[in-house]
Length: 169
Ligand SMILES: [Cu+2]
Image (cartoon, rainbow, N blue to C red; front, side):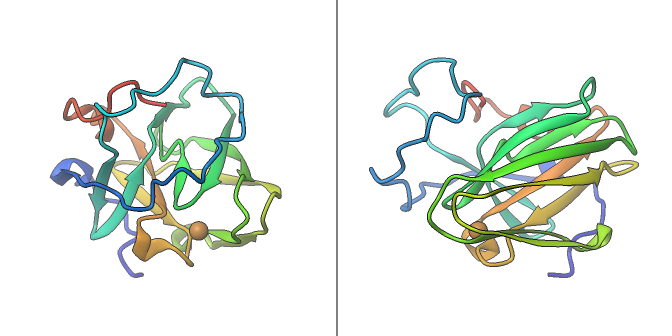
């Protein structure tokens, strides 16, 4: 994957694609942050972002400008939330929990991050938001399946471009 450079093209492609992997198997686990109410059953198709050629299964955006830490879960096959938006150059510590029975990974080559995450384990990693534009991270095992996320700054919030993200996270 050589497309990890910071760019501002996250809005370039916002496509709605049905994801076959969304079956009845994921119990959600009660990870806490999603206490907003039951998800709309049929009305909201999952959205998929594409940044620098990397497909991102979009499970919502978190605003982290006023925060130093954020909770994130690794699912099959997405990070939730998928997009972290904050200040240019801001450091943010991610508490990432793998809520699946599948090994996952976080790779952010530009920041020399390549960490595996075993099933039902959690880890902490600190990333730096880009000076401008958008930086993509992936699970190296499932990147082709769209298991990826983005760090973004500035006024162009990637998930806000279309009405494609009802309810958010
Ligand atoms: Cu994965």
